[in-house]
Image (cartoon, rainbow, N blue to C red; front, side):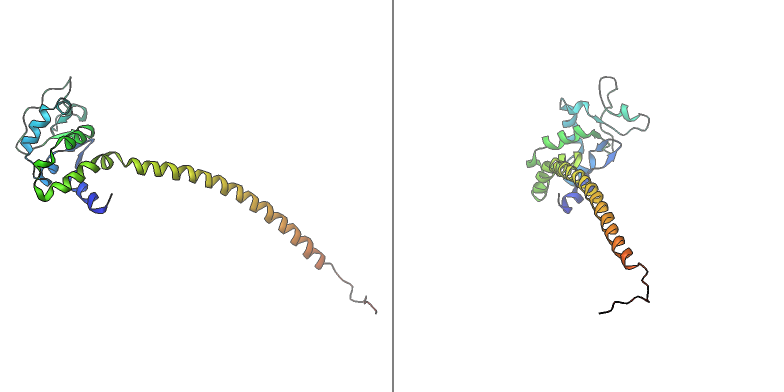
Length: 179
């Protein structure tokens, strides 16, 4: 992902716990929040994955589901939250033709990269997996090579000690070789 793509996501993807706000994306791409909210409510999957910011509710109760009450219509501030799964689905079902021409290409790019941004790049995960396996192998080799270096170093020290011990033998200066 390029730096400009990351900036675009950083400006639009705002978390509240494990949920993502809808309004920043709507504002960035000039979408009507109330219109998007009605689309979210009508969608059979998204209708169960949205919520509104309510400080009286715990994080688990913010989502609309079987055991939680309907959170009513959108408030004046457009405070709507979606789970990560709901957010990805919502972005994918938005028709890019509804986006103004100046932002349409950015939005199409946004749609194609949103999963990588939210869940991490699958390609990056594969590279990490390969590098992790390689790192483990290199560490094993490093350990083996380290032990071998230590063995050879010890032998060299023995050779050197033996050689220098011969040189350090005391010689009697009175004895001379006569030729």
